[in-house]
Image 1 (cartoon, one colour):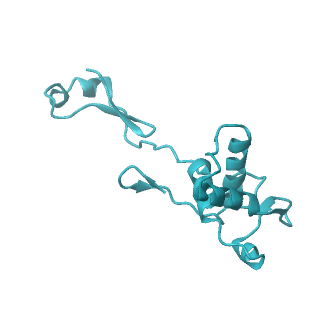
Image 2 (image 1 turned 90 degrees about the vertical axis):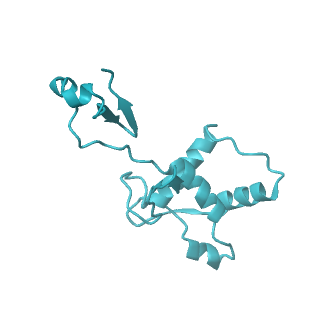
Length: 142
């Protein structure tokens, strides 16, 4: 998934998850998207378009199961193929769009101290005092 012009978020459906209820990250994002749909936070588009019919079919065809560890798990794409179904690529894109959490940016730069704000370079506008908060760069008023 591309965010902005050049940055992206790596995502692996089979990757490990921090949520103990699910076997993997793919299962977590599918259940997160399902919860958002059921709670009305994602409103499905009208179902008369062919692309929307494909999306609804893919969202409803994947089966759930439990892993030996007791964690919730969803049917693999190989198991879906064995049942004569194609890969749920459109549904995967939807659940990634709403289920993937983008990590907040963190600055490892020290905050500009009051004495640094008074430095001749800052006062002359050669160095702009900034603070990085989350994914935003905020100018510090002089």
